Length: 219
Image 1 (cartoon, rainbow, N blue to C red):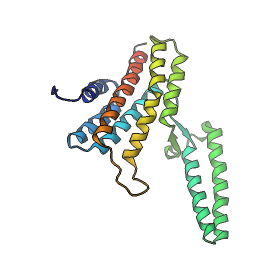
Image 2: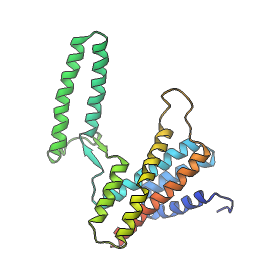
Image 3: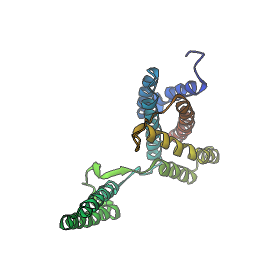
Image 4: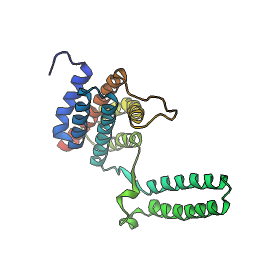
């Protein structure tokens, strides 16, 4: 490893070495992020870093017995989109067509509620109807679940998760910046300074999640 690498990058490479043994999904995302960084693609690399954190949260939550998705949520998203379309149609003066769409939304809402309330009776539903819970919600759930377990250094780990919860939210904001275009059409890129700040947070958050995995796997 070159001596002149920033400390943030050195720390991330240490996480990459751990990921190869602990979480292959995180390892893949970090590898791809590193390859993009070598070409100066900060925005694209930042997106991969966000995905690495997301993958680590998913796998840690699963290891703790937490469900990472809820059936029916994506269907609610679709209904919301359909209602917006109906509003536009009605605003354009096509009342009958708009009302028909709203009635279909009501039926779809009833179906979504059935899936949410009685998920075990809908095991044949396709996975496309499931949507992962938000990262910050899963991260909080991990902290709460650890509080119920008798494991080594439980209080220390919970304190770390509490301190780093704000970093998870900041990571999500930067990842969204990397993933989505600007609403006003202005250039929207992650610069080097933002990237280095992101790398530090990614290393901290994933390091704590890996610590949890090691403890759980050895207990």
